[in-house]
Every structure is written in structure tokens, then in C-alpha cells.
Image (cartoon, rainbow, N blue to C red; front, side, top):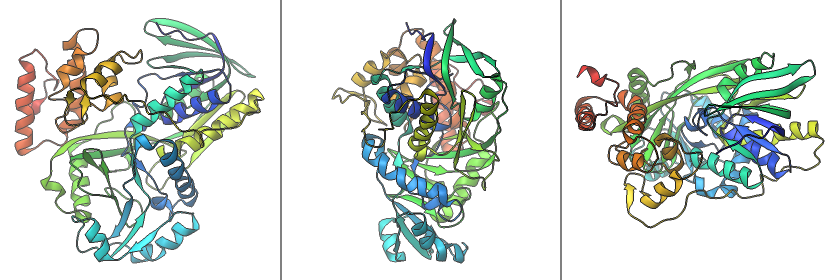
Length: 485
């Protein structure tokens, strides 16, 4: 049974990349740390992005400070978390209609921000990427890469625990006691149990929900909510991470990620009550991305998903992707930033907390490698799309944090591939305690939300057939929608 201590130096609220990184940093410095996450780790914005490890080039022209930070952290993460990084390299390519002046200034802007860049001839770019539109007029090579956010966050959690941190998922703050001098106690509920924790410092790393957390302490915090939608294409369409050589806009990034390619992203006002990709967003993304990479419409779209970016202040495409750390009494609020810069954000937030605690220790997170979190096994594969073995599934299913099939998927990637758990769902549910039918119902309903927006023609018929097969076992994973059938 998981217990939450009654006191701690630090309480961190939020178990995405930033919160997990802060927990690791402060635990390594010797502080007593408790981290709580209202859902599962990496189930918010940290897990709903395109998995891009930025070189900094994307922001060199529009947000040089973010570009500089990305360039520095890119090198650090490749060194400390190689198991989570696919070092694909990146290509920026311009089409005839793109702003010529942007391309002319690109290399100089990158150099000014410390972002390595090399210009390629059009012939070199097309030789590297066979599906690039042959009409491209300019190309540059950069140090972009793909990163697995789920493995990265789990590694930070594992390392934080190894340093003594209490890290708990499915635990929610329900109240805070505070005076004019700061927060005195925090009420937390988990699995029907109520705990009261008295921390010296509270760090609000709740992302899109950070404003709600701050309000519990009587504080006002403005968070810009920006929705981004992405589409997952079956197979690696490109060798490199491909970017459109223009000011950041919709559908100008393609990320080869394990057995798929992620196309992104949109930027629109976000909300927390209803977050789902739409068929219109999918069509717009594929149509625009097909201008840069040929043939995307003829490939199978596996699913679409959306996340809410928590931005510091305003929202929208032109809002800064930098981060903000503010303090009022013993509450530290952390907003904004990117997955690429999570470690830096965590270090800066931990520095502020260390000052309040009079900790003299400094951050070691840039030097210490993270642990690889998945066991290496050689048994038969349960998920043939993502090459996940039965031993891995059974081992991870025993972890205290894992309560449902979705938790198991986030830790192993089983069910994320081509068939969207159509073949492995029963094995995943069987590995967990409880009612397998209920486990499958909830998990497949969530998978359906991501598949519904990409279905048409033959793929739609295949998905409806799969839905009827599951109904044989009493599972209606579409919630009765099934496009009216």
C-alpha cells in the first residue's frame, strides 16, 4: 500500500517531465521530496506532444532565448538519456512559396543562438530524403532528434525514488491551508484515503492546471492554454526529422518516431474540459504537410491526438515557448517551457527551492546519466507493432504505480503501434488484476478517441469490423458511436 508522508521539505504537484525532473534534482541534493500526480505520470502535455528533441533551430528566428536553451539541453539529453533518444538529425527545407528572406537569415540566426547548422544543396537533401518535394529550393541540416517522453519521465521518476523521493500517481490535492506567510498544510486524496502533508516548500508544476493549484493557495496565476493536434502515420516516412523552413506554423514538422511518423502540429485556443483531435484538423495537417513530403495522404493514419501547451502568459503561435518561475512565500509556480528544456527548468526551480531551504548543494542532473527503465527480455512478443515481450508486460504490470492498461501502455509502449492494441489488448488486460473486461472497455474507448478522427474509406470499414469483433466479448469500445453503424 502506498503511503504519503505527513511532512517533507518539498511537495511537488504535477508528474509530467518538469515535475519529475524537479523531484530528481532536489532528491539528489538531499532534500526530502514528495511528488504527487492527479493522474498517471506523463499523461498530460508531456505525453501529448510530437516527441521532438529540438536543436533550437525552429526558434532561432523568432525566440532566440528558447533556441539557445534547446541547443544546450539537446546535447545534455543525448548524453544522459540515450535510451530515450533516437538521434535522427533534422532537415529544414523551403518550398518556392516560403518567405525567401527567412531562409536567407536562417543560418545567421542559428549561429547567433548557438545552434549548429549546415546548409545542404537541394540535391543532397533529396538524396537524404527521397519523399521530399522535389520543388524545394533550399535546405539545412540541424541536430534535431526524436525523444520518447514516456521513457524519459519514467527514468526521472525512477532516479528520484532511488535518491529517496516519494513519488505517487493518482493522488490529488483537494485543499490547502495557508496564512499570510504561506502554505502550512496540503490535503491529498488517493484511492479513497485522505492524507495531510505539511511541506516547507510547495512547487506547482501542474502544467495546464497550474492556475487551479495556485488558486487553492489564494494566489492568481495566468496560464495560456494552447491546443496542439498531431497525426500518427504508420511507418517511418522520413529518415530525418523534417521541418518546413519558415516561421513556425501548422503542419511543418514530421518526426520519425519508432515505428511511426508524427505530423504536427496545430496551434489553437485550448481548454481542459474537452480535448480531442478533430477530422478537420487531421485533414488540414495532412494536406499542408503533403506539400513538403509527398504521398502522406496515401499512407495509413493510425491515430490523432491533442495536448494543451501551458504557456507563460499569453497563448497562440506567437507566444514565447520560454518558461516562467515565480515565487510567493513558500509556493513556487513553474509555467511554460518545452519537453527539450525540462531538465533546465527543473534545475532553475530546484535552485529557488534550495534557497528557501538553505540547501547548499547544487544540481548534478546535467552530469549524471538517467537509468534505462525497461528490462531487456527475450520472450515472445505480445505487442508485435512495438516489439514488446510478454516478460516485459508481466514485469511492469507488477509495479505499484500501474493500475490500468493505459498505465501499462505508457510504460512499455505496448498498444501504441499500427493496430492500436487490436492484437495485444487482451494480453495487456490479462496481465493486470481486476476485471479484464472493464479494463479493456476503458482502455479501448480511449484508443478509439484517437482513431476516430483519422478513419475513412477502407480503414473505416476495418475499424468497424474490429469493433464488432470486440462486441463478441461484450466490449463496446466506441461508446456506441461507430459512425452510426
